[in-house]
Image (cartoon, rainbow, N blue to C red):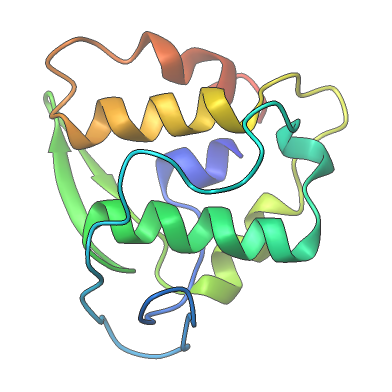
Length: 126
């Protein structure tokens, strides 16, 4: 899921449909993905992977979008399919949960002004 944090894959889509193709704006999906927050990232089902990818892209304003996170430019996945493919590679040793991932993404959306301590567990999953 480190790939999801840094710049995993996904699809330019709308409202969870995730069409592959150009950059498409998505409305903000809110602070929670709708996936059970205690689920380990490495045990997400295919439909949960799609939901997480679409949620992250929506928080960024769409697939293929970039935002400033402190001095770093953080990018959403270029397409839903590339996001799902990256997320499916999360190692079994990764102990991060959906809640950890949501907290990390929400910190990035806030401009990382409070730091990105919530992202450490995600980044170490690579």
